[in-house]
Structures are given as structure tokens and as C-alpha cells.
Length: 129
Image 1 (cartoon, helix red, strand yellow):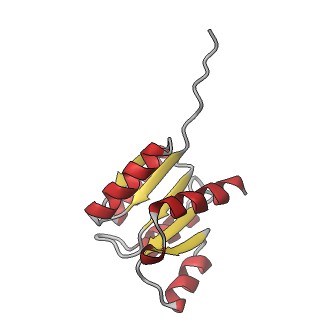
Image 2: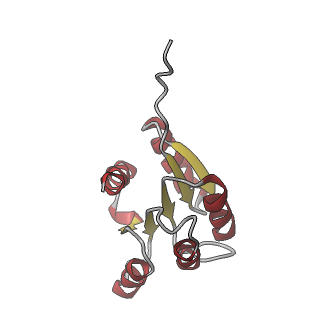
């Protein structure tokens, strides 16, 4: 019998808010994604390099290392520079948004403005590009 298993899309979620992280992990698993979770910036960077995710959802305000620093490191590393990164944060200032996009983020989503289902839709759109 042929192997009909479809390769699951690997997502790295870097989020320190346990409630929010749990909500996203549940939603992403239900959508059929393979989800890795990191609760701080250093662990997020390490997991990105170890597990080679297809896309990264990255909070900006994180313990140990900010999301901006994680993003900068990801984009400077040849093994992770092409992985799309969506910043998912509560920082909505225009300067923060611009900084994230300048550092190479594919998108910048304000947590309060997006439901998990909308974030999944955005992710799928970015991965199709």
C-alpha cells in the first residue's frame, strides 16, 4: 500500500503567555499543523535552528530575548533566513510595526485584532506565496 501520509506543515510558536499559547496550539493542531512551542526568545531561536519550521509565529515581548532580536538572528542565519516569520504582538505602534517589517517579518499582527482562525488564514496565505 502506498504511503498516503501528507507531510504536516511545521509551525514554531514563540509565545510566553500560557493561555494564548495554549489557545493557538489547540487551533493549529486542529488545523492539522505540527506545532512546536517556545516560551522565551532564546528557546524560540534554538528550536527554529533545530527543527527547521515552515513558518514561525513570533511574539515581540518575550523573556530572555525579544522577538525583534530573535527575528534579526533568524534573518542573519543562512539556515533560517528564508523561513517566513509573522510577528504576533500587542505592540501596535507604527514604529514597532515598521521595525518588524524592516527586520524581515512577513507580516505583523496585533493580537487583540485577530482571532486564532484569522491568524491561521494569514499564515496559509503567506505560505502559498
